Amino acid sequence: MRSIPSAWLPIPFLVFSLAEPALAQNKNCGPQSQKGETCLCEISSLHPTQSSVGIAEVRIKAEKLKAKIEKRSEADFLGYLKKHEKEEPVTIGPGGVFYITDHHHLARALYDIGVEETYCTIVDNLSGATPDAFWKQLETNNKVYLKDQNGNPITPRDLPTSIKDLTNNPFRSLAGAVREFCGFEKGDPNSSGEDYIEFQWGDYLRAHWAQTGIATSDIDADFQDATNAALGLAAQKDAAALPGYTGKTSCD
Image (cartoon, rainbow, N blue to C red; front, side, top):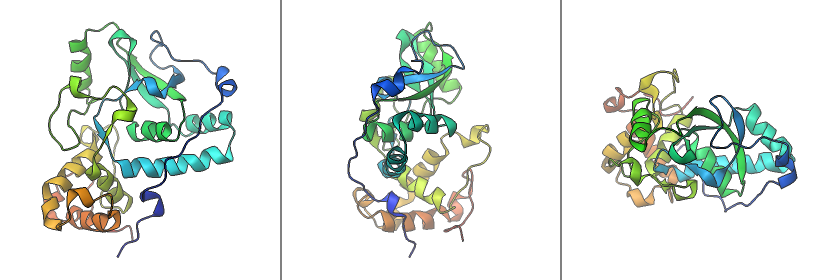
């Protein structure tokens, strides 16, 4: 039986905060921030462009970030985020609202450990657009994922307005674990087929999950068994059409 890394297992709620003096020297993002700028933004002000995350994947990120915080000062931790390209990609929407179009798991992990601000990179400023034009552009550019945690279609108005309100999609967590065990691989990030690849695999796992005999409600509680089952599903020929398919059940 494969051993799931301990970081994938539930961890206690962690609380860390960054001191204000460390942030004062950095430029803050605002409604007038221009495309290409990197600046500091409040995590609580970020609006998701998807409705769910895999909470198990959030926990592994939170545990890693906790270790990074413990080894660094507040300013150095911010520098670590910037150095490793962990900025939140932001499109400024109507009314100056900040929408993140990727890195939702990172944002939620930072929020869960009590970090109040992080670096954001302004991908675009569409604050002057109408709401309809704004959402149409995001949909055209595949920058919004309009399905709920159960894979059902939603509209932009159904999206949560805060990172803290992202719901749990256990199949997204399983897709992340399958990727870690080389059950599928990410390819060219500029390819449209790679858009939301983990969610594509999560949808596949959900559609075939009845074969495993494991209740969806038990996935997070018995994550190791669930991951083994997910790897078996990912290796089936039914999954061969999905992007990144390897047919493997381990990286060995």
